Image (cartoon, rainbow, N blue to C red; front, top):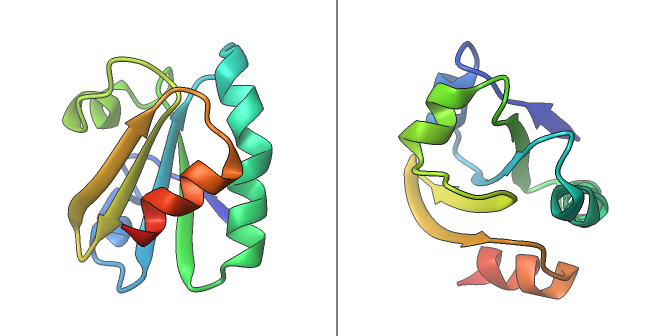
Length: 101
């Protein structure tokens, strides 16, 4: 399951015990649409993860908070801390590699 993350529920993400994958995207972004199916598959195949999507047009403050300058940007968090990040379209295997580092 993928969560739609916004300012209201973001504190729950910070408090999560699970590893978190955040996908910063916009509806108009072609590369974001290329990555989206991989993020969805990862969410379905890995119930031990918390996967969330953040629309940068609707949540610009969260995008600023994470220093998102281009999309898609994927951020991996553990215990409320950013442990990995990558930007641009990438294959599923590269996204999984971000989670295992």
